[in-house]
Image 1 (cartoon, rainbow, N blue to C red):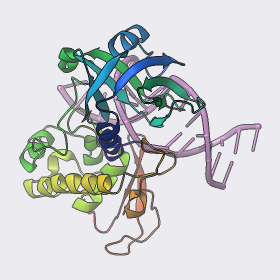
Image 2: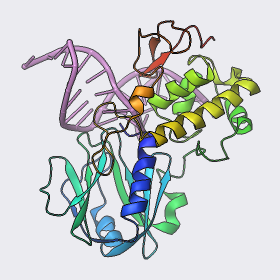
Image 3: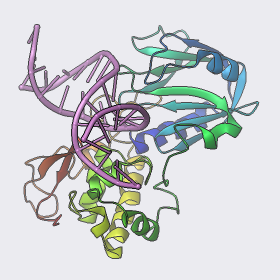
Length: 275
DNA sequence: CGTGCTGTTGCTAG
DNA sequence: ACTAGCAACAGCAC
């Protein structure tokens, strides 16, 4: 269940422990992910190249490699990257395996196979089909009360659904959408266009604060999220609305309610989050 | 043993 | 143009 904070933690670990090292070989053990892996491109653009930088865009990881190539990894719902000793036997669902210098191995593990791995020339990044349509980075200055206000003017969606649309604000997942709306005291069913500037200010701040706090706690582990070294995130015990149906609201003790929106569970306090 | 739920995203049908 | 619904898959709680 990697959302943005979980992905950001993995990025930081990659920046610390993989950047500067070389991808010696790549093995694809199963090519059918959300889209079939382009094995040809992957082998051709990653083998023998040193990793120069680890970046994140929304929930996508980008490893810039020597020779103007970029490796793209999305973890879907159940994906993981494991940095392990090369001698460790392959686990079930280890679909792609990079061997690194120093007898280590970077493995892409994804039981549900909703993830994505691709390699492309770095100069094509802006044209990449899955990256080109992404909206504003929530932790950057481009997401502001003003930009949020401007974007919501034309949307008839409920604000919770709006937040999940990556073409507007990128990388807000189901957990953090509920948490941010709770923090901003906004009802998840409120039509986006009805938010006034003050509400957009609260929501913008809530998104940034919630994501930053989750990053600081290593992310949220609901079931099977693990970081690069198999550690769990700690933020689940700080969740104030998500998954807490019937439990007392941490602000007013009213029972947390839940409903389904666009096929996803939404949690909110019916008393603090008025329409 | 089912049955129903789960973190994502992109395609399709309306 | 914009939105809801579903499909891709495995695992787990009940």
